[in-house]
Length: 517
Image (cartoon, rainbow, N blue to C red; front, side):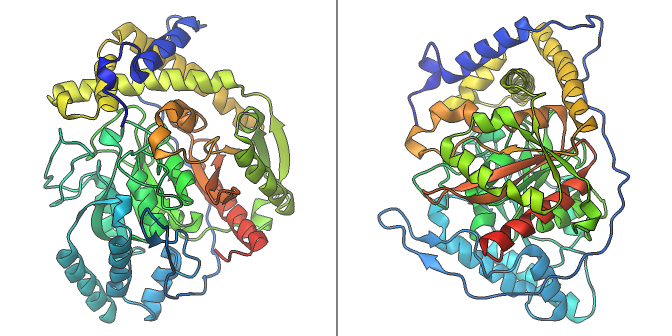
């Protein structure tokens, strides 16, 4: 960890806030009387769903690799281990039990503890719950689409009887009620067995206490770093995380899994330690888009269980490549992304360059999002009487600096947010889907991550700020064997289209790469 940032005159947070305010003060509102939109409109989709074919189950023992001097860990993205969808089918066919799925998850945890993914686990209670799920299934009682599926929860989301510490020594709560999102998972039969690591208060994009499963000398990304590691290594078949600026998509991209941020308001955010009341999202991290869609069907109480991703169902889809984001990506990342672009042609999609977005839009989103989210976080922690002296320097400095933001600047940031949202949403009058690298670089080294803090999240912040659904999907590895994520974005309320396009891309990519999964 770097020196105490609070003692540095030009610390990371102070410079970031100064730059953000300069951007804000350079903006001019065309309607000075416009009121600030303190909560974005919640959208809904009227798209219909249809049936898809079932997936055959393929199961085998997982492989181990030796990482040499660092730590022995389980190979990420296990080719022959079941996905959530496959496991659900296998449970109902009697090919696997909930207890077996749990034991596999616990074994994965035993083998990867050095990566720092898990912060709270109750093995005995989890085993009893798994046995109860198996007993129910034997009696013909099906608890729902997630019956007996082991799932982890990010440690800013309340799970009754488990501690919520939000990755901080300054916070320790023992909630008696589940967050609504967790309650919906449980009602659908989920076997929730562990809380996983977060960047302190979800207020960062690195989760510095964690290690990347592809290279333990690198960061996992954040703030849902523990969730991404857990899914990548098989500690549960999915995880529930949060996203305010980039926190589902960045760690998913860096750890080679799927991170799905739905439309703002799609999943209720009560029962979480808030980072930003007006920007916080809840969503899943999973192995595949299909798995994420099962989680979304439960979390949003929407019928995403059976999605038709066939060519006929997606004919005429127009895909816009965000050119400025491609041009800003590191060469190794851009090369991987460019190598998969022909997939869209094979799927029959129309591909276009998008020149209606510029680096200025992404910089503006970063500035506005920083002012809004950090002001709201500082307000919460002030009223919560959080002892900032117990926080890591990076977080303490951000929360302290945010208390100096003027109310007028906060409200102007919200008003400019609305203007930016209207401009961005107009893109979807022309394009059905936008694509861009999720992160313009690979996971940076753990001993040198601080200088990349703003760059890691720059391609993701815009879509959280304006509320669009966005998903990061693995699209290949660099020559360093590090994963790259491709981000898909659609109009608010169009989760079903995002799922369809995501599944179609994912299946074609796997077929092309010969990975099978």
